[in-house]
Image (cartoon, rainbow, N blue to C red):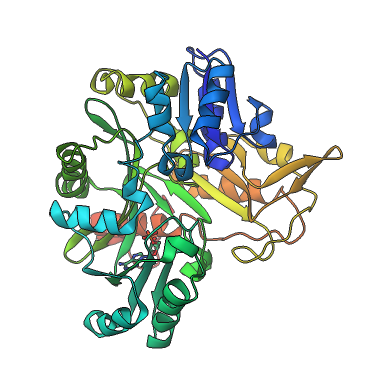
Length: 444
Ligand code: AMP
């Protein structure tokens, strides 16, 4: 089979890398791709906002299967375009992709289907927004309706921040049409968790649990980013919580979309806050997360191509998914300035040395190959991903690999997976109370 992957980030590099292992694939193509992907797949330029152009490329390449990484092509309708031409593609239709493409659609959908989420109001002018603010207290969350590449959500701790966000989105139109309407939302407290499933024409499969690190700096400080790292470990999701999320969120979401005439297919990412009142949905993404995809894919033992085909053929329950019990950790290396304006054009060294460590893979995101050198070309540059026998050792291995890589201005979080370590410690102490004071658990 010829397989085409659409996208150019670390998530797509991970997908291509895994598809390479498949017994079912012949040629693997990626568009537009990046220099890391180009080592394992032929890359082609394409406009990810133009469904007709993507279909034309797939036809030229005789792609038997296309996998969509990012949200923009899905929201633009690439799946509908392929389906009407009879070409196989994994992802939701334009109608179903509104779950991510419009925060208002997602909130109203959840409201209609009694899916737990934060209280909200929809406003389309500044004055109405200001009137609503007191109803939500502080902090309050202001979200632009449309796609905004991670810049559309403001968690305002003070009234002036909330006013500024409303003014930026609704008056100054800082995000253009994407901010023309706004959701004002109650701020939820708790720990965040991502739950990602692969939904097929019949049935769905959960992927292993993962946790993202959105803030730029350690201890969740600083501005929000596209994601500074992620880890996947089974301890993230105790069975009881898993069942609660499946029963209260996943099943009603998939059933609701089908009942409303928009059956959902493809990866569905549900961002959750684990509140005192149970899990509540923060957001839907109609794709795998980036960087969550990197550690998740690293743990996959099944043939990814077979799983994707099974999702289209109504065979997910038959094919299933096999996972490594070992955790995986991805540390994102970012350019100076990120998430603001980032430096580019810096020489990158040390990837081979990092990958020579056992269980390590470095996925490319913002890189470019120019004048025989690998250079930085974006905010998030690389995702250094490791897998190992337990979480402490895996974190250690990921950071040993990070220490081999260098580019000027490189910054990264030093606490990826730390919440997982704390969770393990608490569980250990609860299970072995004698171990507590001054006697750290052997796992740590
Ligand atoms: P979203 O794109 O809607 O997930 O928002 C991005 C990030 O903003 C989330 O990962 C949370 O960290 C934060 N966030 C969004 N909505 C809320 C909320 N209602 N309460 C607290 N934090 C939120």
